[in-house]
Length: 69
View 1 (cartoon, rainbow, N blue to C red):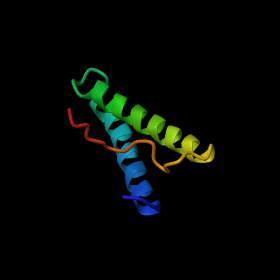
View 2 (view 1 turned 90 degrees about the vertical axis):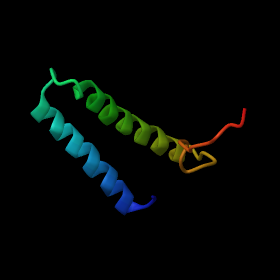
View 3 (view 1 turned 120 degrees about the vertical axis):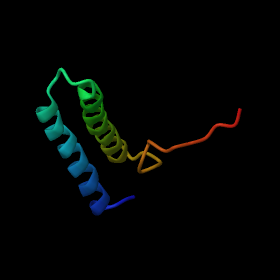
View 4 (view 1 turned 30 degrees about the vertical axis):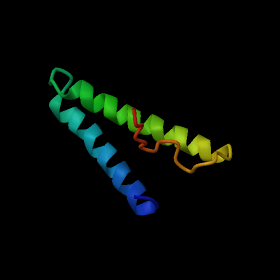
């Protein structure tokens, strides 16, 4: 998933999770998980953006790689 459509989907999902946090409240068991996910997605996006601005080799520093051990 790349491009503006996928970025809009990620943003919409993060916004929906942030709104859900308002409804469930901080005493809900899933509140910390939602808070961590919302925060992590924003930080990951910022790190990827900065990677691109600095001329990183890959447009996305977060790639899934399987290490054979």
